[in-house]
Image (cartoon, rainbow, N blue to C red; front, side, top):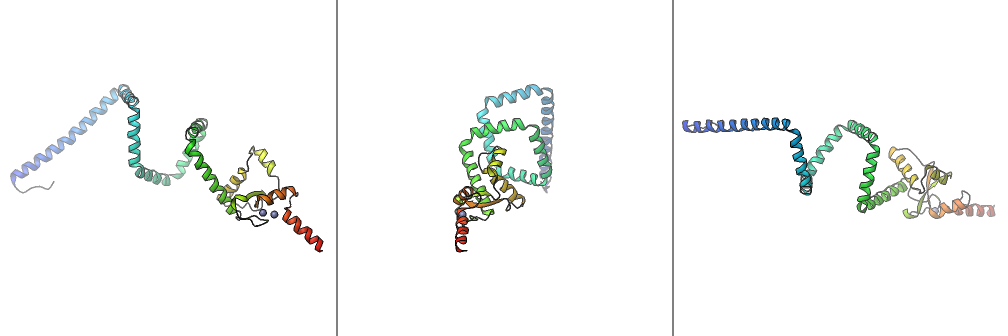
Length: 228
Ligand SMILES: [Zn+2]
Ligand SMILES: [Zn+2]
C-alpha cells in the first residue's frame, strides 16, 4: 500500500493496515489454538480423520489421483532434481531398506505383478526383445559362419561349448541367461567376444551335430582335402 496524500485518506489507509495486521494476528492465534487443541486431543482427532478417510475412501482416492495428475510434472521434476543431488545417499538408503524388508517387498511385488499382468507382460516382452536385439547387434549382428543377418535366426553360441552345463548348473532352462550376462558385460564395457559369438540356428545346430564344426566348414575342408 502506498501512503495517500489527504488526511482522511491517510486515516483510511491506517485503518486498512490495522485491519490487515489484526487479520494476520487472528490467523496466527487460530493456528496456535488449533495446534494446542490437536496436541491435547491427538487420539480423537486422528481417529476422526482415519474414520473420515475410510468412510470416503473412493472419493479420497479419486481426489488424490486428480491432485497427483495435476502436480505430476512439477513434483516428478522436483524429485528428480533431489535425486540427482542426493544420489549416493538415496541409493544407499534404497539398498539398506531393500535388504531389511526383502521378503515383504518381494511378496508385495509378486501380488502387484499378478494383478497387473495384462499390461506388465507385454512390456516385459518388449523390453526383452529390445535387450536381445541390442545384444545381437553388439555381437556383430550376423552369423559368424554363414553371414546370416536376420535377427530372428540368430542365436548365441558358446565358442568353446559347454552351454547346457552352465544352464543346468544355474537352474535356467532358457538361453536367456546368456543374453543377460552379455547385456551386463556390454553395459559395464567388458568384452565377451572370446566366450560368445553369434551363429544362425542352422550353423549352431550343425556345429553341435558335427562335434564343434559347422557343415559349411566341414564341407569346405573336405573339398580342400579332395583338391589336395
Ligand atoms: Zn549361419
Ligand atoms: Zn555354418
